[in-house]
Length: 342
Ligand SMILES: [Fe+2]
Image 1 (tube, protein in one colour):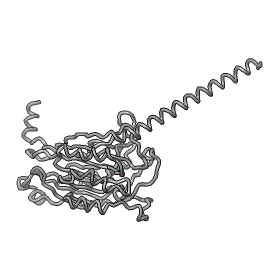
Image 2 (cartoon, rainbow, N blue to C red; image 1 turned 90 degrees about the vertical axis):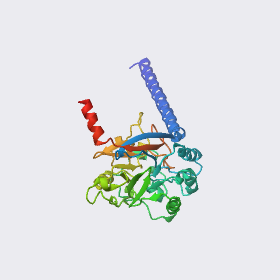
Image 3 (tube, rainbow, N blue to C red; image 1 turned 180 degrees about the vertical axis):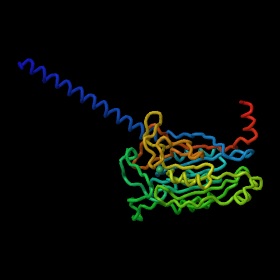
């Protein structure tokens, strides 16, 4: 090859290199901008999702349930505190907290300040792993490849007492305000004339879940006489992590709806909110919103926070969920509807 041709080849190589560097730079800038958006904007884009579940007996009055999960509170999170306090203006009839309330050892006062107006309302709670154990430093994108299929807590470091979060004080504060602790136990509340039978479990992600079943319904379970059951009632299963075994067991025990959190809605999602992971064996497509297991609605919250070591959300803003439990159509009206449409 001539010198001219040689020089020409070297020049072409330099242009290609410059082009590649420009592309890499643009890619790095776009990635940085996206991460900055996820860190400083999406993380604080709190909103309320609304759902309606027709699970109450015909004729029952509506029950408005405010479902909170995965607050992952850190001292200084004033916007989160103000948002949660403001949820009292929705005037829910009942508050359900499905755990992971902390992401810092000193967060209890901030958590209780956020929940203070809601603790005056009927409420119930279950713990998540981030109510017990302080988070560990980790890659923010860890959710994209870490998959705990069994939820047995195997391999987790639990021997350091300095890493224990103030869960006892939290439970005492909740109990003192009248919230029901559903830690592997049942509970009952009457709200708007509707008796709500709860079955709650400790965190399945840690393998702490021991299902208590549901308390018998007077006049219903013994002889099957619905007429003798008295007040209209509904059975709700409550857990932090929606492992499939947990949902299946709730369904088998007779739950009519299940509430859970843990997934963070996938936390780092594709545009449109499509989750890539659920951090458990629930399919990612069910990582937030209402889906069904054996005909039973399962409400999964995308949560209100993240680990302080993974402070990024993408296409998955933090949420509280206002779920209206409403009456199923009566057999008669369903029959009339069928006749009218025939
Ligand atoms: Fe969480």
